[in-house]
Image 1 (spheres, rainbow, N blue to C red):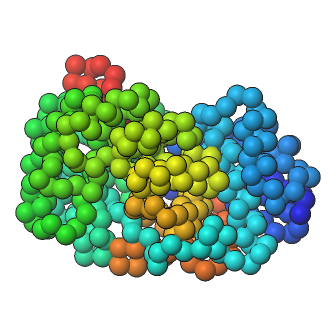
Image 2: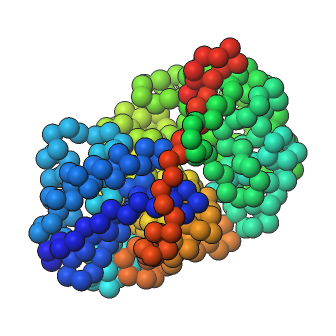
Image 3: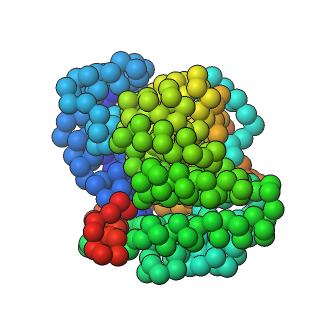
Amino acid sequence: MKITDVKVIVCGPARNFVTLKIVADGIYGLGDATLNGRELSVASYLTDHVVPLLIGRDARRIEDIWQYLYKGAYWRRGPVTMSAIAAVDTALWDLKAKSLNVPLYQLLGGASRDAVMVYGHASGADVEDTVKAVAHYVELGYKAIRAQSGIPGLTSTYGVGRGGMFYEPAEKKAPPENSWSTEHYMTFIPKLFERLRKEFGPEVHLLHDAHHRLTPIEAARVGKSLESYHLFWLEDPTPAELQESFRLIRQHTTTPLAVGEIFNTIFDCQQLIEEQLIDYIRTTVVHAGGISHLRKIANLAEMYQVRTGSHGATDLSPVCMAAALHFDLSVHNFGVQEYMRHAPETDAVFPHAYYFENGFMHPGEKPGLGVDIDEALAAKYPYDRAYLPVNRKLDGTMHNW
Ligand code: KDG
Ligand code: MG
C-alpha cells in the first residue's frame, strides 16, 4: 500500500486550518495540522520537509512512520514538529480504517462506551449573562458546561464570546490586548460559581478555565474557594512548564485539576501523571503527535487514575474533532471531551459523520474518521493571517494569555 500523493491544504473557512491528505491505493486519509496563529510554519514543515519523505512508503506502517519522523528529524518535540507528525499519523489511521472499511474506533479496540460526554462553552459579560448562557446549554442537553465570565474592572478577558456560540479568539492584523488582574479575578470567581450552583443545583458538571494566569499559591487559593461548588475541573490553573508546581496546588485543594492543551508529548506530563498531580490530561490529537502518541499518554495516565479530557476548541479542525471522538470512544480512561461548535462555513468545508445528541457525541459509523474535505469549497476561503490575543496586567506587564 504505497503512498503515491500527499497534499497540504491551507484554507480559512471562518478561521484558518491546515489539513494533510495522504493518498495510497486510490484511498485517501486526512489529518489536521492546525497550530492556531502559527499555521504556515506547520504547513511548511510538512510541504518542505515531510512530504518528500512519505512518497513511496507503505501507508500501513503507522508506528514505523511515526518513529521515522520523530527520531529521524533529530530535533525532537515542540508544537510545530508534533503537529506535523500528528497530521501524518491521523491521516494514516484514517486511510487504514478506510481500507478495511471500518470506523476508526474499531481498530483502536472498539467502543468502551456508548457515546462520549462533551462539555460546551457558556460565557457572559457578567454573572447574570453567564447564568443565561449556562441555561441555554442546559436546554441544549449538555451535561457538562464550562463557565467563563467577564470580570468587573477588566475590559476583556479569556473565554468570553462575542455573542452566539462561536467563541473566536483569533484576530486579523495584530494580536488584541486583554487586561488582567489576579486580585479582581480571585474576588469574583467564587461569586460566579456560588450563583451558578444556586441556579442549576448539584447535578450539572461545571468546569472552568483559568488559562494559565495564576501562580501555584494563587491557584491553590482559587481551588479552595471553589470547593463547595464542586467543579468537574479547574483547567490550566498555572503554566505547566514546571510540572512540579502542581504539587503546591494539590497540597491545598480537592478541586480536580486539568491541564495539557498546549503539551506536545508524553514528556510534558510524565511527572504530572506519575505523581498524580492532576485528574485530567487534556492533550489533543493535533498538537500531541496524533492518535498513536495520544494513546500512549492515555495508557500511562490509566495506571495513575488520571482520565482524558481532550482539548476541542474551534481552532482544531473537524478532522481533529473526529479523531478525538474515535480516541475518546475507545480509550478506557476517558473523562470528557471539549466541544465547541464550528462555524457553518467550517462545517461545509469539512462534512462529517460525527453528531451531538443530548450532551453526548458519537463519531458515527462511516469508514475511517468519517470526515471529508471539500477542496473546491476550501479554495474559496483563502488563508488570512490571524493572531491569538496577548494579555497584560493593569500596570502594563506582559502576562500569560
Ligand atoms: O488556540 C488557543 C485555544 O485553543 C485555547 O485558548 C482554547 O483554552 C482553550 C480551551 O480550553 O478551549
Ligand atoms: Mg483551555
